Image (cartoon, rainbow, N blue to C red; front, side, top):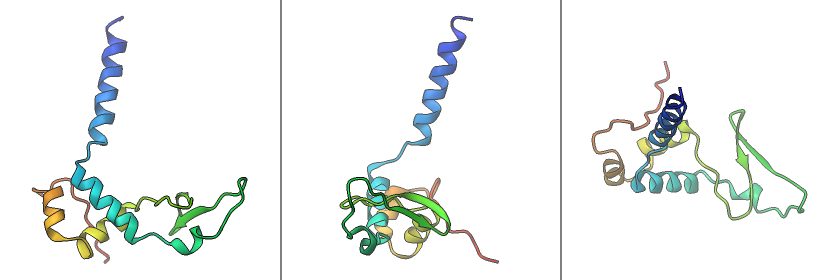
Length: 108
């Protein structure tokens, strides 16, 4: 029993690490996506120290807007960015076998 708890904890840590395992190329593409979808018009307005600006995209919470901070792309935005705007050579460098590459959902 005393070995079961550390084993479960180690398994949980390895699973969490594998889920967030991104390459530098993927991180660069995500940063470019965030930059391309950033809406600086609402963030550039000055806010007081106790005032917050929350950003929503299609009814889903994206994060808190802060000057100088880019909000991450949603999964749909990232897939659309990879399909339409990103440099194909960078996409192939980040996802050489296309395994794990996000794809846009087909509209019926």
